[in-house]
Length: 74
Image (tube, rainbow, N blue to C red):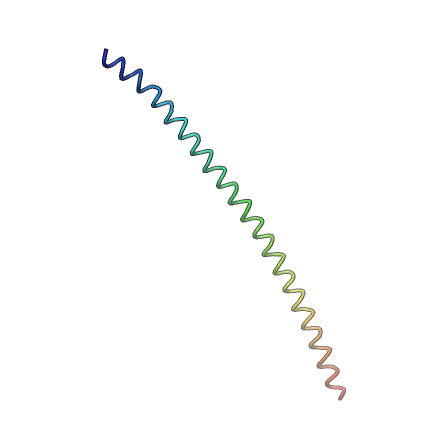
């Protein structure tokens, strides 16, 4: 009788543990996906900033060359 009662209680516990494991696994997968998306977005933003900085540097270099050229004329 005790064994039957133990089994009757153990089965739902094992099922609940399995369900909790699935929930945890799903949560980890969702977090991993979210982190990857945020990493991609951040990478795109960094690339955009780097491109803008390179463009600005090129414009500054061009302006410096113009100034140097004008100074040579004096």
